[in-house]
Length: 103
Image 1 (spheres, rainbow, N blue to C red):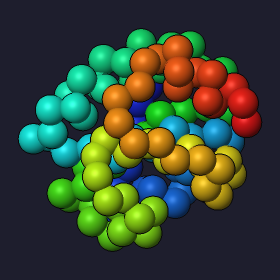
Image 2: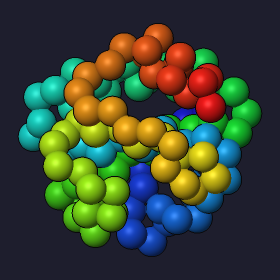
Image 3: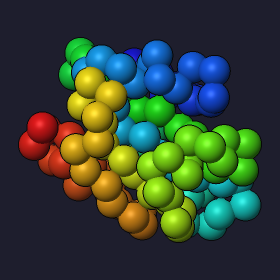
Image 4: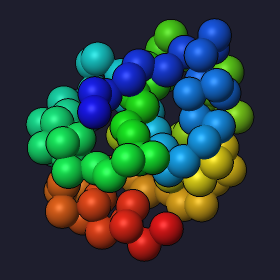
């Protein structure tokens, strides 16, 4: 698998099926930079039908607003395009894996 970057043009299409962990971040955000290596560790552990999508809140404010992102990093877990959970802050790859597997 590979981590995908979501934007206004592709977000709905790439998150419409399966389990998607959406990472709302900004380049200037220190905690977001701490989360990034954990997402890189998690990515190869994902099963078929599971993926990670990163959304830069500075470039995609409409998406961030739709999901009521108030602080970053925020992770939203989608199942077939519908929200099934949300977490704020830095999490380990193991914590995120457990969260995803719970769906």
